[in-house]
Image (cartoon, rainbow, N blue to C red; front, side, top):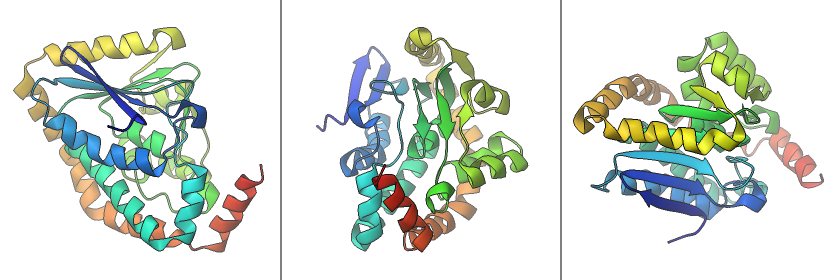
Length: 252
C-alpha cells in the first residue's frame, strides 16, 4: 500500500491523510491515482461508518504537483489518464455512501479545494484557505469547484472565485457556505473527529440514504457538466497561456 495516502482505523472511523508534507500534499501521479481508488475501497469496508480526510503537515493539499502539471502538457497519454482519474475522484466522492468530514488544516488549492467542496461536513482551521486557480494558470476549471460552487453560493460569487482564482479565507468560506465550522488550528482534528463520531453513531441506513438523496443534486449537475468540463480542461493544456504560466511557475 502506498504511503502517499495513509488510512488509519479508529473504531468505526477511517482517517485518510494525504501524506506528502514536504510538497504541501500536492498530488503526484501516485497520490492522484490513490485518491481515485480509495472511496471504492472505503465503501466496501463493512466496519467503517464515517471518514475524516485531512493533510499531513501544514497544508491540506496544494493541488496538482507542478512536475505532473508540466508533464501533462507534454504527454497526452498521461493527461488522458489523469483526467479520467479526475472524473473518478469527483464521481467517487459524489457516490460515496459514508459521511465524509474534511479537516482542512491549511491551504486547500485546486484538487485540494475540490476535495473540500465534495465533502459532507467541512471543518477549517482559522489559518486555512481555499482557492481554485485553474484559470490563473491557463486551464479550464473542469472539476470540483465548477460543479459544486454554484450549489453552495451565488452564481455570481462562484464566477468571481473561479475566474480569478482568488483565495477564500476560512472566515469567508464559512460565510459563503463552503465550510461548516472554523476552529483554532490546535483544535481542528479533534473537533472534526468528534463530529465524525456523532455521524457514525447515527442510524446507518438513515444517514446513508439521506446523504444519497442530498447528493442527487450533485449527481444531476454532474450529468450535464463533468464530461464537458473535463474535456475542455484537457484541451486547455495545449494553450500557449497555460504553457507560459507553467514556465513562470517553474522559474520561481
